[in-house]
Amino acid sequence: MKIFKYGDNVDTDVIIPARYLNITDPAHLAEHCMEDIDQSFCERVIEGDVIVAGDNFGCGSSREHAVIAIKASGVSCVIAKNFARIFFRNALNLGLTIIECEAAVDALTEADEIVVDVEKGEIKRVSDQKVFKFQPYPPFLLNMIQNDGLINTTKKTLKQEAI
Amino acid sequence: MGMTMTQKILAAHCQKTHLTAGEFVHVDLDMVLGNDITAPVAIDSYDQMEVKRVFDTNKIALVPDHFTPNKDIETANLAKKMRQFAKDNQIANYFEIGQMGIEHALLPEKGLVVSGDVVIGADSHTCTYGALGAFSTGIGSTDMAVGMATGKCWFKVPTAIKVVLTGELQDWSSGKDVILHLIGLIGVDGARYQSLEFTGEGLSSLTMDDRFTIANMAIEAGAKNGIFEVDERTIAYIEAHSERAAKVYRADSDAEYAQVIEINLSEIEPTVAFPHLPENTKTFNEIPEINIDQVIVGSCTNGRFDDLKVTAEILKGHKVHPNVRMIIIPATQKIYLDAVKAGYVEIFINAGAVVSTPTCGPCLGGHMGILGANERAVATTNRNFVGRMGHKSSEIYLASPAVATVSAIEGKLSSPRLFYKGE
Image 1 (cartoon, rainbow over the protein chains, first blue to last red):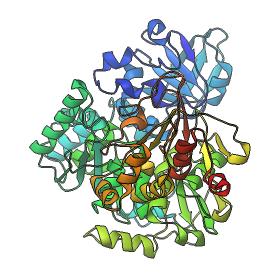
Image 2 (cartoon, one colour):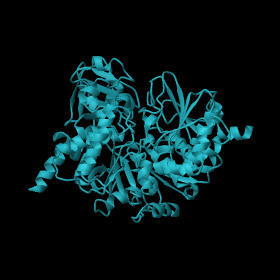
Image 3 (cartoon, one colour):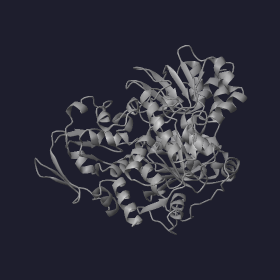
């Protein structure tokens, strides 16, 4: 896996510009992911890569296309100091792993390799085995993530209510 | 410990008497909103849930406003998908071209939101209805889908920043300048995950259109919602527009706020947010000469009647600078018609501005005024991120309608206060 590192306030207009919002197909959206902030992202990103960024990642529009584009590009996880709130809920609703961990963001570089344990709340840097701890998700959100997002969770609940 | 306005509304919508910040709740929804970009994605998710019908055909609003009248085949197909869904599900509040407007100007005008409501919208500027004393917030397409199916949405109960307004706005300052000032003060993440609650004796001097503009840009400070204390002006607006009665929730006197910020409206100057963040605010004593190529007056932030009024008052007897394209976009059909009746449209055309049918259009870089490489615009819109209105090297300066209009005449970023002093 590789790390792509960015600064503060990465907004949804640079994650997926509105000129591509006339499409909804995830693979097609992924072809333009991050292109206004990092033209080489789409060529270099592969399955399992990680985005590391500063404060307020995903600020701006409510477009879920931003999460869809990141997910479809193969990114397995976004680690930031913190997230803009709509991006935060969109990511969890769609089952994209996002982690708030300031220490990891400050320490990690694009040269690092990491292993993430979401349930334990740990990011481990492979080179020196250094562990960065983060607050694990509360049960409410963990349940949603383990059920692969809000749609599946709701579907299950609705079925149970029908019985 | 008492509750904030927001906490009280949320509590009433999940049948609880008390809520504490940080709790997760499922709340009942009074309105679920989507547009031609976000609803098509939500419709796919909705279909996956295999529900028989939407939770309430009267509590869903679908507004084709972003890429409409459609700019290309793809967006025509997106709008068509939403139109068909509205038809199949007998959605009462679907607004076709001819009836539509920019969603956040349209819903209050149609009386679809009143004080005390909980509204979610798959559009980040859904926070606009906080001007009416409602809890309203932007969410994504998945939340919209689940909202349409179940009438509920999950929330983490937010803490709040209390914004106490004093004084009164002076000439050529407006709600836009107030919210830009606040964002400059606290930053684009200054209210992240929090409510912004506006109160204080200064409130009474703010028009409803000023309040809509302020609440609209709460998201640009990262806020979950922006909400105004309800006063006589709010009630009068709701009575004039809605058949439903306002339900008023006031913050408890011992409500806990993470921060209290006082803003003296008398001291607010015309303010501009420089590229590429709404927090990069400057007042005219610190603004150098900046030539511009385009001016936009419009959007869910500043496309209302008061905005067109000030634009017309300034433009009357003047011409748009030859180096500038000025595009004016009334936010709804009603606002458009009212502007025609008031003679504003004639003033706009005589001055050399173009007037567009209601659309979000250029605000998000959709259509109707996209910027080329290195071009600069002064816009009354809400975001000036890289590439937001077009080419990634273009620049957006966010300002009030008064600043935008004076700048259109002068061909450079200009202050209405200096413009009138010089005359």
